[in-house]
Length: 558
Ligand code: COA
Image: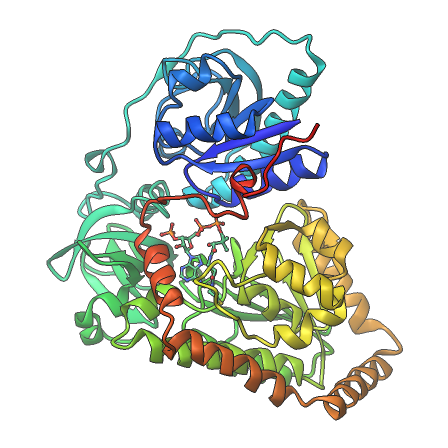
């Protein structure tokens, strides 16, 4: 079938549906929801058999839904209607939530139901539930709906429902004199990544994000107690929370200590080394060991890695490689493994070009430290989505194991034709061939975990449930292998042989030469694209590589 996606953006849920439906042999084209007339034009050009709206912020016009079946993905259970569906489910601490696929009609979310799926709720941020449970349920429900549509003998049922109000800031407000830590975290989680909770820090308005519990520090409710790296700690009535990110009016979402210079006055509460703290606290880089395996976690908000975070992670990795272990597992964070350099801190820097340069060098240092590790077998356990440089940073490890369901975007060009670094020119071609590497970079399309393994880019795709346990077991097996010294010797010999042909330094220098041009050259495309990305400028057109129907030679297949 020809399936047209009308969507607000090509977010990870939309990417996943795109990959799953394409894998079934459907031809999927995408049009961003910019204006009714633009969507109408896309429909006229593509003549879709079916329209799917994975992520919409407004209604589909009657001119389209009256003539074509449009399936809307609503992140709520059957009968739930309106915006803020997930926000309310989190706030009400419902044990179960779901996704409904319904037919577009005049009233929002009130059309006949084609399919639905439910999932148990998890105490987590809204964006995390959306990227994981909601996405899995959406895949299940959309697949069922598409199957029902093709079978031609399904009549969708109308169900009674009730629309809830959009959640307002007044509903989200934190009462620091009354709310306990659990309530504060629930309120912040229901608003993360968007829109955050409107509040004040240092007497100035801002929206709060990225909250973590703190088990040891406490003080006068509402008082700011300490700072640590990017976060500040604020007392609640029964403990404290760390606030990692804020958005000040008219500014970008930034690490709290960067957004407020005043945070520098707070006492520093640093952690001693990299070992995982024994009680709950905010710790972005945390290390633990079991059975000859070192596990290095790095929980960086949105998977974005600033210059300092890369430097600290390199230091932690070097330290971990001195430990008497045989395997190091780089775990990444719970939601993202890595999305490469930190575009927000770059945008906020005095010289974004200089900061881009510092950041790419810092992430390259980390990739190089991993590549040159002679003392352990390194494993990237990619349990969360990864994009751009993050995908190649993972590939710097000897093994890459990826959780089924993870979305990968191993390319750079969407960011203003960025060339990319992280040794991708060394790491990618041997895995997928020169043509394959060129195609991945040029097509700029997402890939599923299973596709990445099939292409030979990554090594294993492990089932979602039990991923962490599976990783630990497999890593322990490598650590216990009798031939581990031989494996380490072989890896050393391979790097030496590769370097004899072309030193790593040459790959790095050639990539960075291109990046210098991106950062400092005449063409400002990277700076423009980065600005639009971090400012979340609404799309004004759909990129040609997504909108098949807008290709010059586009013809409906006979
Ligand atoms: N730097 C800063 N912020 C980043 C980031 C980066 N490299 N990558 C993602 N983010 C932020 C997004 O702005 C968004 O912020 P929000 O919490 O304010 O909404 C959040 O992470 C989630 O991103 P989103 O695009 O909504 O997630 P997704 O899972 O739907 O899509 C990607 C994932 C990887 C496709 C997409 O985020 C992306 O293209 N990132 C840019 C990657 C890049 O070009 N890196 C630099 C080159 S090395």
